[in-house]
Image (cartoon, rainbow, N blue to C red; front, side):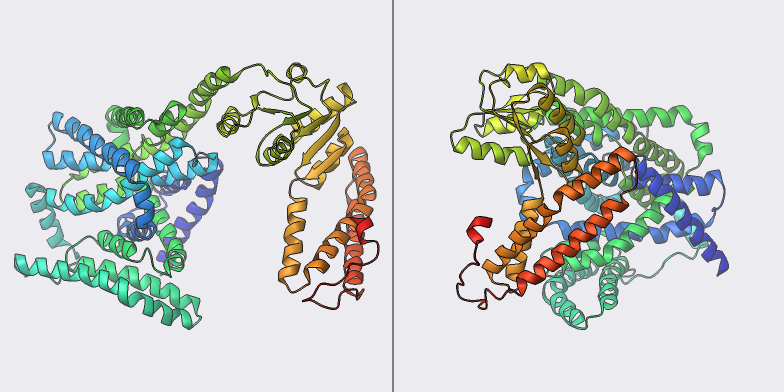
Length: 634
């Protein structure tokens, strides 16, 4: 018992240390798990022989992953993505499999093994790529969406791969493994071991029909019954029971457990309890998959890397190059142009975590000799290790080149001048501009993001690419004739510097600046902005007023309370601002500022209480007259 606990502690300790470090370095959690396994295995020797046993248990994380993939596959989403899902994704998997299989055949490898190698190398790392996209904000780009389509197709393609690979079993490997199995205590539970062919077929069809029927007609009642108990742990147990039960049934009839759970997930994709199931299974999937990757890392034999260094490195670079070339050509065919095409090609050029699964699966099904498995495991791991470098290559070399080309094409000199100059047309500046233009007030719009300018031009809003912090550009757009300058650029520091420059060089200008928060608003005020609008203040105030109304307070009284809130805030503004200035000058702590803020909150509480008790509105249903002086306050 103590030995198991010690091993569990070592695995968990390695994951807790390595994964956060890997994520902070931008390497992704999968690489963190792999590194953790390498450290506690080949490097430090904390784990050893038990790794293979634990890996069999951890492979259940893959089964859970496919169940969750099935849950995500709503028919509407698949239909909307059919073009790139089937076209781009299907061609990528097919072409990659053919090329890698052809290379393996050229080197004299048996055709069954060559096909298996082609299949497992055609897959990419969903975990690394999607996580990197989210971290870098690339998910909504054309390249990001195309990559997601390919990854989704690959995840689905794993299912037929798991079904096909057992059919590729090589007789010589099968005989060897049977001899090994006789010496071991392998799993011999089977309901179909002695059935004839057509009986076996009937059993398989019946089991699949039972899963579909249960998912459609029984699961809803079962989950309603469990949910009515109000016991969350019972629902978690039910979710695990479902996955384990389906996987066991598939194992008993000789089919892939992953195939069964994937099917169950698809059946339950439209269930009312889909998200609850997902939330309950997700933590177990994450832990087991993490454990699986740790065991993969712990099982890597660096002696093989040393002995076959040139072969491993050569195959790794060849895999990345070939997949990148195939993806780049497909990107051109499917019109994923410019930097998006390169993003698609580079981001998916590695092998993926399903490669480890298929390697183990092919070895277990007598398709891949163990000596090949060691080399391929190293190739898959190394290609994943190189992925962050490919993203750096994209960020540092490829993306800037396309941005320069794009920007150079848009570097036109503004041909008009406006009464109002707006710097920055993101979500804030756009609304300001639309309101001014709608009232026939001429504006000149500047933005440093070429894509944003293109977007505005597509909807017939005249705008120009340019850095509004450049004095010569401001002269060109007629800043001397403008009466108002709206500062709405996203960079907080540049916004303050721009206001400082404008107030010094063009004192006639009225400056309206967008602030991100209270501290930024004080910085802009200190820089000389005439009017400062917090980007969230008034929307939050409107939301608060609506919340009061929805809580049962009469709409008029809610409006009055919101107005009182603003007045009380404004009455304390100067005191808070001066306190902030003193803290900036003296470098003192904000003790005084906090004290004034507490006084502000107390004044708010007092003001709200007084307003609630003024009694001017006794009815919550009918109209009531406003208090005296209401119009003056507005």
